[in-house]
Image (cartoon, helix red, strand yellow):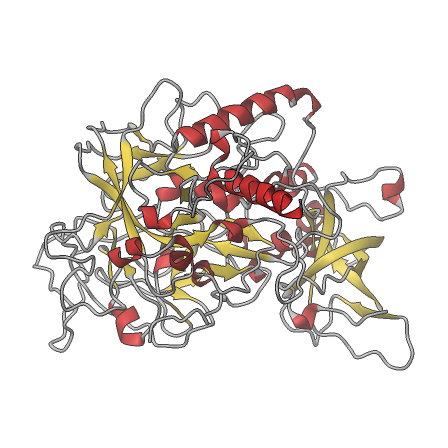
Length: 633
């Protein structure tokens, strides 16, 4: 059966110290056999032979090197295991065990209401592994990773890509934008984390499977040992474009995509599946849902209306239907800088004669990746359609030289909105906090410093946007009798893994006599602390075992400095800036069929003229308001 909407967000193994994949943004891939920074070996040294009973396997000729490192093709695992639908990701090179596989940036979706089971729900992950970010919200976060994590099947058995447990690679935040100096602050995703690593030697031709806990089929090693450049059903992901820092933009806008070789006019430079999203799903504070859960923050923090994810969607001003690309690299396409025109255009996936987007006539429904029949449905139906998707091609509109940035025209409405945003941002520049530091930056500035207690902070406070959070074991002794507090030592010999994180208050600091060597002293470990935990029971990312009983204060003694970290206070980071830029990317004229447009109201006498840049959404609302006022009379 195809997904019916009952699926849940993907779950990873829980652990505060568990790493999540990310792309290394500063990495420039030069080798034609490098896969986004992948460590590889000679592909001819180990080639998995095809078995006689494997109809999906295509043999690789002796000595023939695959021309592609990572490629996208029809997934035999999804077909065989009845797991999701559409395309998977395959490796064209051997990947030694332990090698890192960089894919795409992490995108945060905070306080998101997924109660209606929209299609996007199948592409997001729970936020339990990034508690330092989740604790900056009231109800928790979802995580969206375009690329391998969105396309590859996930399983808990015999996967070939596993989460890294290397503490040095965990959850870094690189901040190349600052709210006092960059108009794009809060408009582009700047969070990254750890990496996937090969859980075993992965052989050229294998389909990639990622680790999760919500599926238990045997990932196995399904081989398709050759990338067919002449087969329109598969697309190479790493032979044309790479991520770099753009230098030709007057305003810093983040990373961009650059040509690794000459690209011809009309060439498909990369392709990506897209997931339909209803515009209302990206409301950052929609209020109570039909289950009584209120997604409006209780402190009424001023925030932008829309999720940052809106900036990565394509849309039309007269439609509530948006499309979010889920493929590798495509989130790095920039709008061209001033004075230049785009050299790449978005088009629906090219269909060859006799092909209905299936690939081959014998493909099953589950292996289809492009469903043209969606063009005949209305936008609301498409936005809630499970088990069916569409594919877009990014096509060069003119020759693109090696090392030239590939850009996409976001459309006149986006450009007008951006110019207006920059104008307003410049007017308010003098009032912006130049001394603002995120928790990541503050952590760097406080390296080697002892933590201040709550009493010391009366005269020497931490910035208002900085909280402290503590990791601890979930193993608590049941309170005995009528008590008001529970106290336990962090160094509990009976404790399980330290896999909980909650906000905490530092109460006391004591010199630890057992820590006397220079290395521990330099790391601040010659002190230990007494802390009080602050419960966040409403945050769905907080594991139940980590929550506390009501009306009880929880204290932990002997807490090492390494177990206490600085985190951003709720809704204090750039993504929550009230005037952060929000605007979907426009689509070329004619890309959206008429069936996806909103139904227009006609003949509403007295309706005033709306700003065309606002889109039909606001004109329809105004028309309804006029009709309601007429009805009252």
